[in-house]
Image 1 (cartoon, rainbow, N blue to C red):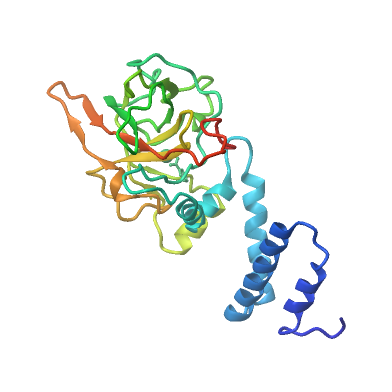
Image 2 (image 1 turned 135 degrees about the vertical axis):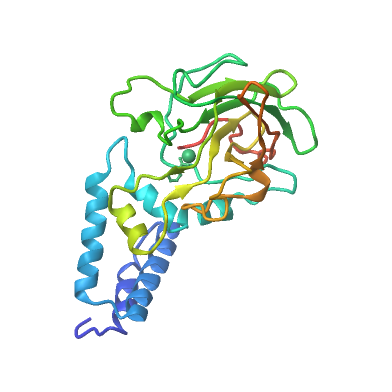
Length: 287
Ligand code: BEZ
Ligand code: FE
């Protein structure tokens, strides 16, 4: 265990984990160490560069609080969030696809009756959202719970307005007996993810923009079905092919149709995947 060199150090570290009692943790640690070491060797990482890497991660930590989560942003812009979603949400054909959760969901959003206006004063062009929630065999999912959130016309979520002390453009509603839902809100617009911190500097240095195409977020829960975390995207958005967090799926794109009175209408039908036998269906998830 002395005189380790750049080639022998990897096995020495892995051997140090031989006594790890948790097999899953051992597998993750082993792979992480292998890939980190291979990465450092491949790019011939200098001490100065790794120092800058640590300084970057430190700044991610310092800017993170209960309203700002720089590590989620980092995972999102590196495509790791979407990769994890993709490999854990392989659903049967016909089911609505999942996409990134993002950092702006808030537990305990206000509850609304069907048809209510969830904008609650948020700035934006009025918009009616409606559709159905069904299972893969076409059966209605009665009373499915829908947690919805979106940004305002300035591209900001309520939690990004420091002066705001109540929820806006977010809420929890239920579908009716036939799985139909409808609510009012505001027109979704493209927005830039927070880019005034280290992740923004990374995007800038990499020659990338911080924009996400316009979308509504949904988390849908119903007994007997897998919880669905997804978005519905606007079909006319210029950023559909360059989403900063790689979340777009073709099947999640819908038309927002302007009405004669200048308001908008979007219709989208969700299809839920039945929960695996024995799982805690509809019991909520850990987000
Ligand atoms: C969002 O859609 O709210 C979001 C997702 C990833 C990063 C930032 C925002
Ligand atoms: Fe969003």
